[in-house]
Image 1 (cartoon, one colour):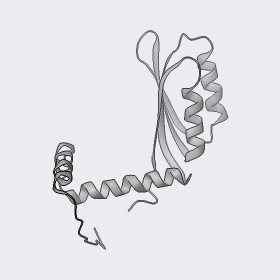
Image 2 (tube, helix red, strand yellow):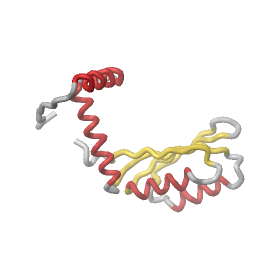
Image 3 (cartoon, one colour):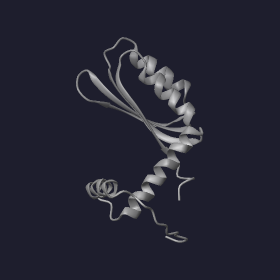
Length: 138
């Protein structure tokens, strides 16, 4: 790592002990790496709030027997083809399917697409997970 800056932080003992337990559980090699990840998470959240370009995944679970649901989902996806990079459809059992959609675009547009898909009648559960394109993270 080049151009590394060191700084000191005063943290109450009970807080640092809890932090140390968390970073040990997650397997971080040091407090420094854990703190770097916390800062990166904050940068990503800020990018989302500022409606910058993001990438992410929309996952939905639905009963494919629900009348016209596949067509509705397909129509929504076609209407938002500019945000969709790829998708895959997985048959979980006789009734349930998982669709995973990889997306890219402004945070607002991607979140709107996710909300449209998840709120479609017949979708049992869905989640939108956004992250950075990596351009703003060191």
